[in-house]
Length: 245
Image 1 (cartoon, rainbow, N blue to C red):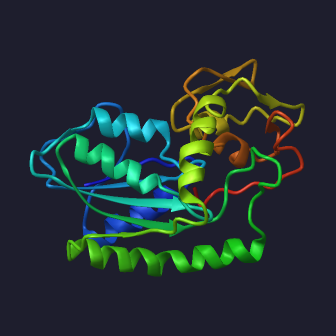
Image 2: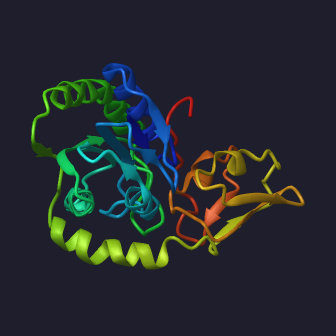
């Protein structure tokens, strides 16, 4: 079984391709997963500020798993993941399960909420997407072989990023209070339909956000008129979502 979380489509694309390659079912993450019939569980998710999305941590902690299940992580990221894979391993092992391997797949950048952070150039985005199928095929072979490995891109100063920056992200970046919508909104509702935590409703034809934000920025990226921003940090920046999301 492949369990995935995705905000802008990168992790969903990886999960679906991996599922097709391995002949595994794919299921979107939920708070009360019953995986007691699954001897192999592959968790696919993005990395947010060098850590696991809190919604993923909550789902793993709440999941009911087979007593002898083997677990794998396939994380997507724009540049690197710090020590996020180590956190995943600790969570799995604390539940008494076997954390066999962790892999990462480099995908186009989506995090634009900080100064100097923006989406990739068109050429970089194209190169990352072109490399993804080969990387997923490699990971599938190694999962089938039950190879025990951490094959991830940690980047520079991984401990600092995951231990210092990630907690700041969790504290401040999961609030939806700073989202705004301007007059270019066409009331299409794409943001509400695409929100992975169902945190957006339309009020008088315009989006309003509740208190269950995952911090994925999917609403910002998928808006066809670029009407949504997160404070002033995202203004004049690019948008990205996986093709055919």
